[in-house]
Image 1 (cartoon, each protein chain N blue to C red):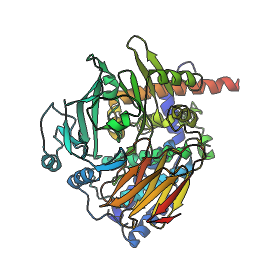
Image 2: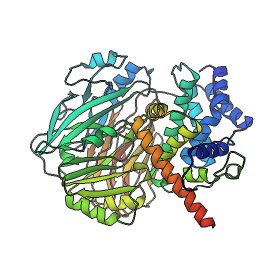
Image 3: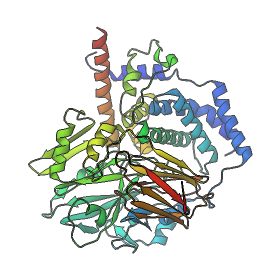
Image 4: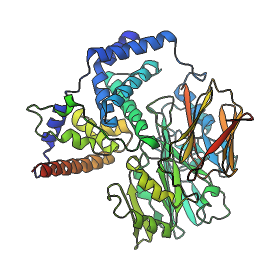
Length: 162
Length: 396
């Protein structure tokens, strides 16, 4: 890939890739590694992308796969996560539910991927289905299940605080 | 909050995650790393430039199946969602077809070492059960193929068709059922049927009459296009009694979200679903109890044997081989258990031939210009069991 074009893409999509990697890996160190790997793969891939959206979809898909690979390791099935402070302590007028990230990270990987793509990236179910290679119906099911679990998690946290 | 407000969820999540912004230094570092890699030259690759057609050729050539202790080259996939029943398409046509409008797939033979296709609508027999290839798909963007089959009992009643179809579209793995493998668990007829099943990303079950066959672990592997995600499948076939025992043992250990196994008394068949990614060692341990080798050392660290051109990781459930296809200078090696049983690997024409006593089958293959290959296979070790490795006659 042309160097200038590559630089442009890194600057344009780095944060998106890192976020989805973080959602997959649940820690910043692995997320950074995954992000770097993803862009290295982009650098070497002999693939023609038609649009930036196409590139972004590919990057997110690869980041998800790379993150999954980490978690599929038989000896990495149980890893505790700790939210980085600059993320966990974010409070602004938009954040009405501060436990939401923790709740999302407590979900199964496949559900958090869907939640992230839907709520952060604001992809449609159809687009998510294409990125993840699953049916739209499965996307809806995962979204619904994940929402229920997030709600339950947040409620449980609130009860604990009382 | 009595009910989670969707907009609130979105705003909160975006509000938090939006703060996750990398510094310019971090981005520059990645750019710099890539530039340096570029100066060093592109990584070695296996010698051909991949195109869709080449990928298909390689998929055909590189597809491996471990079956009955031997690896056969086999044909694989390339089709389209919009399949129609029973139309015949040749290999060349499939390979040349760039618009993916192909509706049959090359697949493992029905007789050993005899390559053939499976067509949509084609029927197979495994023991008393009929298996029908319902269709297949090929995703050109991700170079991903898949198949799905329906299973029917001897009375002609569908078994689990809905689940098979609904879950067969995620990233690809493959599972090979062979007569030999199946006969570990269930009595089979004389018909020898091998087929590949491209499976979804999640835990998957195939119910075959009153027997239950399920996959329970997938290992990562690499493909030439990282968006193309190959995986390895391990599977186990249980009878009704074992299924009920598993259900009993898992009671209270896991919530139903994670795994549920129930027996549908009306239909007299098991009903369960669970999530591969969420499978924890305790669950694997319970499932493993039904394996003849009774794996106990769930937390045992893998044995890693690093040779100059090959890294062998002997895990609890599998052996993983990491190597560069261009550098590998090993002709053969043997993994030998304490009890003397062994598996012999021979590397020839860029593929592994594997002979020996393996418990379950996994398949993993790499296509395209990827530098590294990862190959995994079932080689179950018992508690405290170790292996020695003999490479080209020398023991490590």
